[in-house]
Length: 129
Image (cartoon, rainbow, N blue to C red; front, side, top):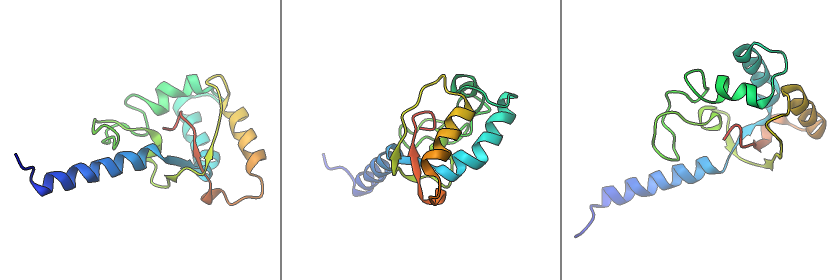
């Protein structure tokens, strides 16, 4: 049975979107400037851990990707990196732990990225993906 070419094209487009999503990095300018304010407001703490932030800003009805279609699986609700319009292909991988506080995480990134153009650095951090 022949498959209509429009179905092949649709499957190919979905595959490209999925792969692009997998390779996305969150813009370091967002992580260091806008994200801390959003996280602090969502959690109600000055320097929450990533565990404390997860349910308030990454998942559930207050999650930044809530209500958006995920390009990886087509289901409703996506990751932060997929919801953030400034995301692009990751340029750096960041190793971290759930117990890091927001201040520890952002302080380390500020030190690492000091003097660099934050708008051109995209971080693969599983919390955002």
